[in-house]
Length: 31
Image 1 (cartoon, one colour):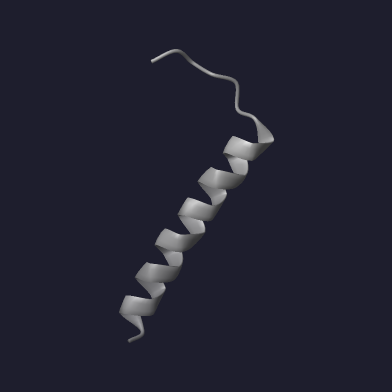
Image 2 (cartoon, helix red, strand yellow; image 1 turned 30 degrees about the vertical axis):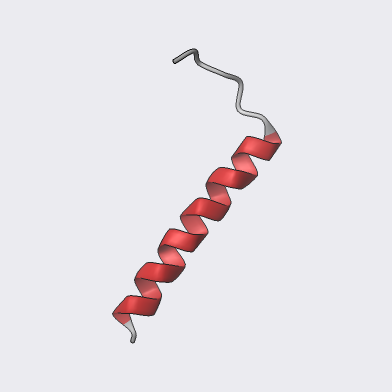
C-alpha cells in the first residue's frame, strides 16, 4: 500500500467517518 498524499478530499472523508462514529457512539450511550 503506497503512502499517498493526504488530499483535502480524503481528509474530509476521514473527518466525516470519525464524526459518524462519534455520533453513533454518543447516540447509543445516551439512548
